[in-house]
Image (tube, rainbow, N blue to C red; front, top):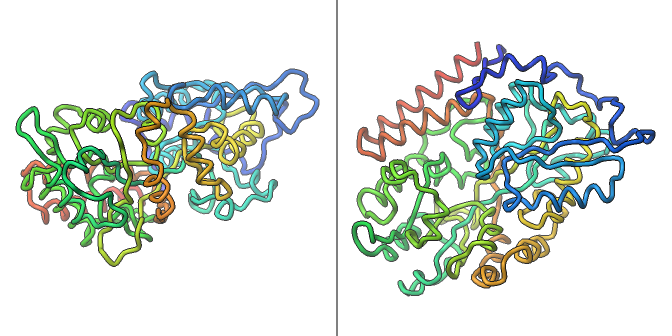
Length: 449
């Protein structure tokens, strides 16, 4: 199959960097003078961990210091790629580093499609030989299985499951109970009952961001195929769950007017955190990374509910799943040391960090929650309802992780273009589905030549 010429983030032709990235490196642990396995090294080897998190978001300095104390032959340094903590900005900078040949050792990507694209560009080192040497079977050790064409290029760092945040004050004012099991239709009814006011002072019951996740609400409950394309790149949007998702959005935003309209979301460049913190929405379907953020920034009492179900007969708590994909740069000169840190961080390290939920099967969820809440500010932590949080986390059931083809970001973009036309009233649902289906298939075929 012909490799695509990838233009990463619209600004960089990454193919020029492939030689420097070592895309043809052998699938075996590198023998380097600075590797962690070398006991004769006199000075500690320095390896960089590069991601988009700010220090406030990630507590990285304390995390790498904990590692350095127990690994005297290695000095790990964290380097943020974004002053704003913006993952897209951070990944653009990582692409530039790969192209320029700058030092890269441990790198992270925030979504399966972003990760897959960089695998296709040759930026990441295969980890299979390292894992085999340590007798690690990824799907036995971790809750997620980020395999790509039979090989491993990353391990799951922060594990992301979704749920719904609810403003307890608005819930009480509407005399509604905290949901413990509900459908998307129930969610829509809650949104209507918690919507009030008009114009600039209007408070909505719901908010959906402009990410692809919010254009696949019902499909996100699908245990086996929760993504807009299948693992082979063929479309997965011509089905009832996607039609339901888009009809739900249209009904809530344009008919019931109980969810912030798509046009306002994009024209005002809304930030979902700000909308929730400001009380402009009573509910926010989002990922579990928000627990750590609420522990620092909560403005009011917040409760938690499971991700709503597509069908009332579905299992409770079915949720889309994601992760930070942490791997070793193919051009690292200290791959063994970098791999050793990746292995530590994705198991013990996240618990030491105390801000995120772990994808490691041996992690204790109660201890994980306690560590996150302990890292917060007391006044803000007091606003987090721990009972509903734990009960929600314990019923969550992750759908299958789909690591899509390397060209999936192109397919996502085409799909979202059609979704925008639908939600702004410029085309009907069937036109949206048929056009998106055709464009997604065109992209797959052009990359299969």
